[in-house]
Image (cartoon, rainbow, N blue to C red):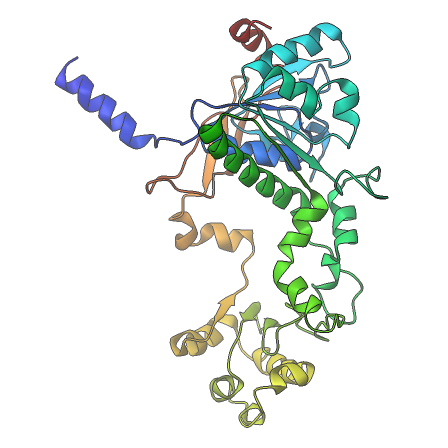
Length: 396
């Protein structure tokens, strides 16, 4: 090898960060969002993810459209959450394909599934059966509401899990009914929780060599998401959370915490002493308020602040408040976010491609490792795109 070749090799190694899960094989039997979000996190960290899909139809989220945008015959949501994975098409009702899956599982490190409780066992791919095939396998399961109780057989869908979790009574104003998150937070946080459990089980397997069954659910993830406010409620006489009448942002935090309409946009104000804010906003009515009034008289104070903020543009208020170390921000839409230099420096967006010419702009891993952000140039696969190669490689 010449010195030039050595320099080129070192440059390539410097450009491509080592990813800690390289060499691990994940078999992902899950659909929609929660399980695939878990395997996406593992893929970003270097794991090889083989997505097992039904022949022909594939993952149902391929047709789950958030808008009328279609990329290569699939929805944008499918592309976003399945980039960098391989697709193996199998019919799990076919004994030959089920046996092929078993041979793949024998060689895998992790299996992920989010069937309704009991379905995996009925098919023959439950924890006990897969553990018997591969005692070192880490088996990850996501359900809607756990594996016991009256809710087990109900649809484990994000909005329905939010509805049962109490979460919807924390956002919005007091005059509104329950307000759901505009994101599938149950799915996403369940995926994050499962990925954490899988990683912990992999570490333990490195010590004792044993596989484990890691389980979570949308409801458990949403309860955990609320740990801070639920703990307050549990230890505060279980009083119903009280949302602000206007400018609501947090049921348990006092004025001025909230989002306010300015003359040309919106201004977010976080925790701020009322006397300090009174001087900066030129609101003498706030100057002598008892600090406890921030919650006791929350609606009255927010109305005063809101009327004052509405008089001037956002930039004017930022010029006054930020130099005084007031916790505040303009409220950006996605145009504003992606156009900001601070966001561009994070390098959170990437373009991925597929052999059929599909090109997608999407997000990257939220982690950096040794100062470098993992990335990958491969888009989400077509149904069964890698079936032949996977069958040949693993003897399926």
